[in-house]
Amino acid sequence: MVTWKKLSPEAIRTRVFDALQQNVNYYEENIIGIPASHLDDKVFYQDAPFLSNAPFLSTLIHNPNHIGCHTMGKSESFFKGTQEIEKELIAICAGEILKGNGDFDGYVASGGTEANMQAIWVYRNYFMKEFGADIREICILCSFDAHYSSSKAANVLNLDVASVPVREIDRSISPELVVEVIEDQKAVGKKYFITIANMMTTMFGSVDDVDIYTEALKRSGVHYRVHVDGAYGGFFYPFSTPETNLNFSNPEVSSITLDAHKMLQAPYGTGIFLIRKHLIQYANTKEASYVEGEDFTLIGSRSGANAIAVWMILMTYGPHGWYEKVLVLLNRTDWLCQRLDEMGLVYFRQEGSNIVTIKSDQISEETALRYGLVPDNHSAPHWYKAVIMDHVTIEKLEPLVADIQKIHNLKDT
Ligand SMILES: *Cc1c(COP(=O)(O)O)cnc(C)c1O
Image 1 (spheres, rainbow, N blue to C red):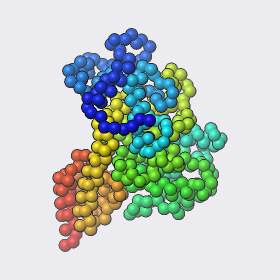
Image 2 (image 1 turned 120 degrees about the vertical axis):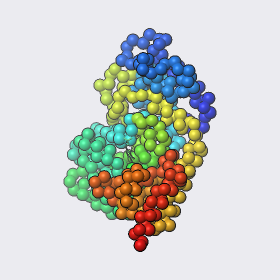
Image 3 (image 1 turned 180 degrees about the vertical axis):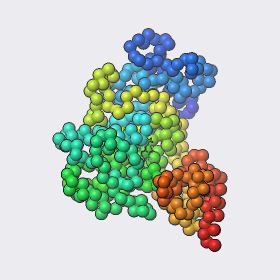
Image 4 (image 1 turned 30 degrees about the vertical axis):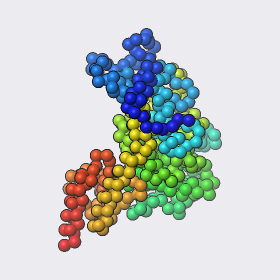
């Protein structure tokens, strides 16, 4: 088993450069059969002196292709060095961050949208292949606050979506409404439910009680699979709330999406898709005959540098360092909430989250615009959200609080 331990910059450098050594070298070897090469050397420096200290930039320039899924037997041997690091990254995310036992499949996707779509694609094909389901008998079950990528996936994969309303003020789903939505769907012929549980929604940071879904689904006697959308929360909530069951310790959870390009501050193009063994096969494209080891992913060619970037971040911090970073963000979020409480304002914050969503009538549009607060709906805002990221220090929050205070004082007089 791979363990996640903080590494020194020197150890990280050595590991990545060793991996690049095991990939093909277009300069030194005679590689004639693939439509791939290093980055264009008229545009991108190949031998700048700083590159020997820059494993990520060096990987970008070597430009390895991580096409396919490397946790599934064979992969393209041209890039086996860096693909091995991606495999290790997948094992750390599934095993150590999300408490999975044993082996998992997964890959670094373009983002949370693709990872969610990959999950829905796998389960759609699974229900059709194993149960002879008609596509009209399958639906996606999620909450109103679920990310719009579930609707996008539904459109691409030709499925219906059933959304469960959430309570206005605490953004939670209720057992009664989940049962009601499932029964309504059964009444129109749905028998197979691809359920998406949120581990921090984009707008509110709210977290679904996954037991509400699984208990209702079990009682209703339908077939179902559960995917957890941790695109926002996957690198945050497991650290702020280690007792959560939105992970692979819960046998009901089959797959999870994480986005390293959100809370982990990795470059864009670093969604992570994780799934229990023996499921990703349902997304196999057998026609991908020129790819060594076939293709089980939605994307096709993708940059190996993305996997290296995420791995480097995790290794630079180690589990304790990353936990401390999460604690700092939680502390600042607490500070903001205390100020709002002192003014008696209405806002939503999920425990263990770094998003504070404030009712729109307590903030002027001008203030929202000045601080780049994002509305739930650009044409008719009900809520504005503040996201306490790395760069959002208390010093940056102070003027926002002062502006809100001014509006609040005006209202009182
Ligand atoms: C951001 C987000 C997504 C989509 O991720 P992209 O990386 O933008 O494709 C999906 N789900 C949730 C909860 C998100 O916050």
